[in-house]
Image (tube, rainbow, N blue to C red):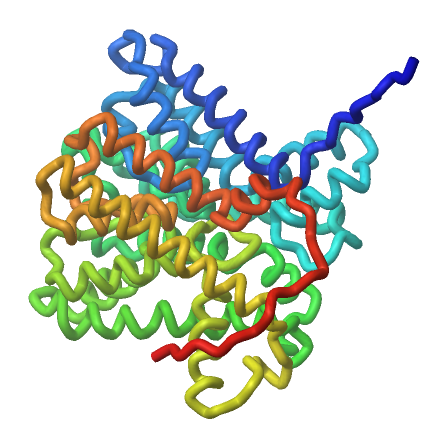
Length: 444
């Protein structure tokens, strides 16, 4: 008699990442449903809790209920922990607990960590994870210490909690705030021209959005820019452009009624926050359509690989732009800083762009049809969701269940990454060496 033994396949790194995020979201949903999580002491509906938990873990910031007026201290703590786990990454947090408990990190776990934080190689991944945890906690505590005097002046001893909450939310690019006690969903509009809060939040957003690999490069090579990895150079240059150009536009075209000093703060803040942070210091509905479209583009681009931010990533945008430039100049390869980019990377960048645009436009179109809202307003919302930003034109609390489910899906895909989901689904597909006959096709 022949016995057939079927070996269970181990989950791939991409599947582990997706399962990890899904598990934390479901756990957070259960905790936020509890009566202890709401100020009213009542059960929160599954879909409301799921939306909030997804937004927190995916560090987005879109909310149905104002955080400070609806959720209790316990609920706010749960949201903060979900933000922290989502910002550092589920796999990184799990690895940190394993290291603390003295457990060995297996090769499979190291490979999963590599995919989760977009590291270039498996070697040194544990050291990098250790650096991520330590630097995250240090930056968040430093941000809280800077903001605490201002918040304690305005809110008393409660200001310590508010400083910590906003510091973690800013560094993790989450955009959740505790400012809605008097005016729900007001974000940081009450501190629009307050320099300390503005500068602290902007610094935390930028530091969190640049990426841990870039900061590791800066820590090792200091000011020797020529020694940086090519990826770090691309990230720093692209980030500088995406911050400065929109800030100049906002200064000269949007906030002309403000005093020069106030205009500078407001303009820079509105250029920084679409990089997947979700805070705002002005009413975004007051912006012109051009200003709203600029924010949409910034939200779709997002932060950098291996960071707390979402979006297509700065490197994706830079590669696509450089590829177009190479095509215009009739050059075969895409180059950065004297280095050639592999064709496979360019292909991945084009795929990511297409996926984000399809999700962005399809989601916006469906919500517009179902809710009867202007297309631009809905596209702003879907860009915010898929870019894991959290900025809104105020329609989120009024959306129906199906529209909210669309935003939940977009937030999840935006955080784990579209390619991660595709690779996880197609992990069992066998590669073939055969190739079909080639034939020319005209484009453009």
